[in-house]
Amino acid sequence: MSTEETYRIEALLSASPPRRRAGALAASAVFGRRAMLKIKHDPKQLVDSIAIPILFTVLFTYLFGGAISGSSGEYLQVLLPGVLSMSIAVVTMYGGARLAQDVTTGAFDRFRSLSVWRGAFVLGGLFSDAVRYLFASAIVVGLGLVMGYRPGGGAGGVLAAVSLIIAFGLALSCLWAAVALLVPDPAVVISIANAVLIPLSFASNIFVEPETMPGWLRAFVDVNPLSHVAAAARALMNGTGGAGGPVAWSLAATAAIAGVCAPLALCLYGRRD
Image (cartoon, rainbow, N blue to C red):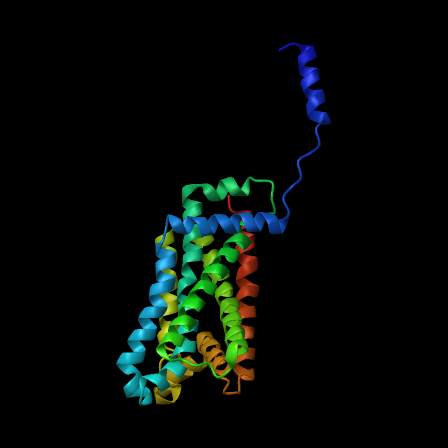
């Protein structure tokens, strides 16, 4: 290539307008859409969002409803808001597993090289998680209505409870994102999440009243954040009153988890080699 042609190409490049950098929300939306499309290649995420709430709602209502509350209908009023809280908490692990998979396959490093806001990749994953949590919530509430559940708090109470639970689920998503960046192995992330979420789910007030438990176990249940989320959802959906305390504790736990884990995940995202 001659010197004249080189100068001509440089002039054309310098005359072309610079390409605009994608905004934070636009880039996050693109990554969120990508995360949703990945469900087609990993349908287990969607299957668990459907199977877990159906299994626990139907199984516990008809097997233990009569023994615990005298009738399956009465037990469903207590059980369904708790199962809603547990179902969202359990499926939060898949966001971390998805991030760990991107790290191991090298997609993570390619995305970090793009000229976009560095937090867009993590925030986009949270957008995708919120959609999955909303879908799982619709499954639980719809199934409950078919089985005879009637929310005394009306549509407003149900929406308030779902919003509170999704916010708590997104805080847990930040936790598993940080874990995925520390231990970039999807299987390990899921194992760690199960080791945390299973005790939180069953050592709670979701299935039985804490008053029937031994003192040492009740002490754990009383400080379990999932117990507060379930109690808040129960009060809001059933319209029984007394939701102020559990809602406040749930919001405090959500803010504490997100306040620690979200900055940690972003810091690990930026510092990862």
